[in-house]
Image (cartoon, rainbow, N blue to C red):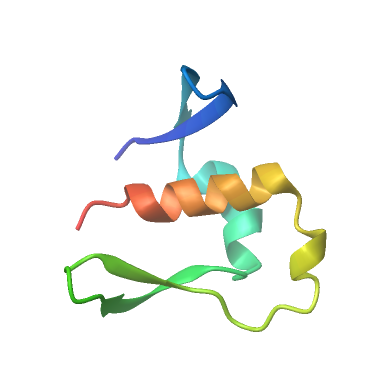
Length: 75
């Protein structure tokens, strides 16, 4: 299964780079965000952000990678 990470330097310029769970496994293991299995009223998956003491120290790229991966998993 292939996932994509969109890194935007500018709003209109996007580079598509494949993103695999194996590539970000250390970031996913931190569990600062995860899919709990619930769904919203519109059927979209709920992303859970538990209490994570070092949340403000998560690098932006790491945060983007995890959210991009979680939102790209097919329903």
